[in-house]
Length: 407
Image (tube, rainbow, N blue to C red; front, side, top):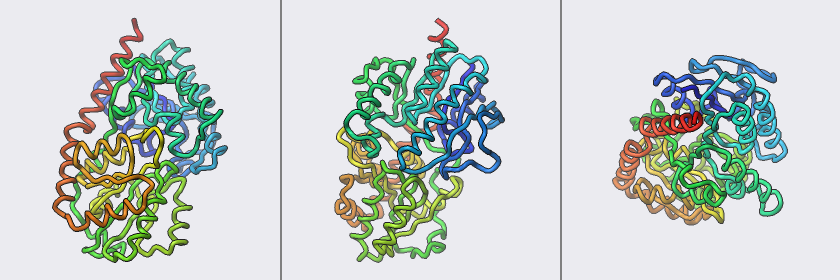
């Protein structure tokens, strides 16, 4: 099978799903080519060794990679984000001409704009495309505050419906997202549930180290950690407000690992609130993450409230589960349902600092319960979310779609 992958993000940008998929495709004897953008995330600037160009080719992970122009940006200024998405949307159409013959096109979404070159390349080559929907639009835009009800929302809804119904098959991360696609007119039989997995070379049950000492954190202190992207969807303000409510608890400290569009604003908010119980560490290389996760007593996932419920399942949850760390999930929808079903963490209402503070304060005195939740998460990861299990399902879907395209 000859597989072409279309994605705005690809290694050296950290994206475990695509790295694992490429490795397994090659190991199984398939041919792979990739059409992607010049790497610029998570910093919003080109990686060393790359520069502004319309198109270039290179070898990454032993596959031919065609890279096309993207205007680098990371932030929440709408017109700049649209320029980032739109620049690759247009350049990818041009770059698609450089792809060799393929049997099936695998398309990684987000952003929604990638559906335009996906459709054109698929149509011009007369080959099917499989659409991997990580965030369901336009509902994800509403949840992030990037889209408001009205003309723009209706326009994006029509675009999303058009994109979803053009794919040979669609992938979503959890059962809760299926109704959004069937409502958009996608036949149920075309929708497959294939969750994300963690980079298992990085995320595993690491032994606690002396990392706390380097941060000035005492061994007896309870570490609440947020590790991952800090974007508008994640409502990290709520965690800072919870930290403010717990300032009188000298035994509780909040650690933030990662960066993102909201990072600078959040660090300023920390300074404005004079929160001495908060540490911002910035971006950490993926291979350094086990040390930080091992020092956390509880890892927080927060998603802003949306009328439709949570329309994403953050991949960091799989990383936390693979690392055998207990979670605090402040979200509606799929993330909350997952933790409740697997007993791998506790939950609270999103965008409610008091509820979060109470949940944290209530769990600090239950170390055995925390340990068991971490073990539950690790076992559930092995049973349901492992790379071996789900990358195989993804390849089987590509093979099925490829065969359908030959009929």
